[in-house]
Length: 115
Image 1 (cartoon, helix red, strand yellow):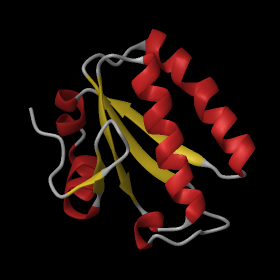
Image 2 (cartoon, rainbow, N blue to C red; image 1 turned 45 degrees about the vertical axis):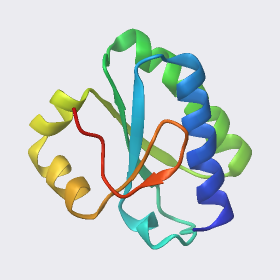
Image 3 (cartoon, helix red, strand yellow; image 1 turned 120 degrees about the vertical axis):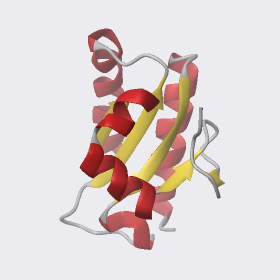
Image 4 (cartoon, rainbow, N blue to C red; image 1 turned 90 degrees about the vertical axis):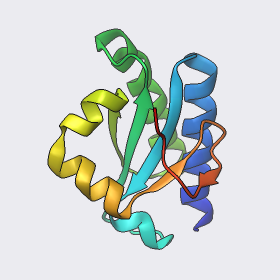
């Protein structure tokens, strides 16, 4: 995995874990699955929380902006509850087929989040 991608996952996981008691982990999917940097592509991530609402999104986006600015990357983040994530059929299928799950500590796991 590229150093930049590793740093993005680490910072997101640390930030979410410190801010939100209900953070369950994240999935990396899309172009960055090959572990390389892609200059013109977004880093696509699904983040899972027990509660996902407007208040949480208002706290998430400044963290995303800070990471994007400091690391010169673009992050396409999808915050979900596990239940709502499963309801988003096409995205859920893509992520479950190819995505990589990272636990709340930012450590890659063989199995994804399960309730």
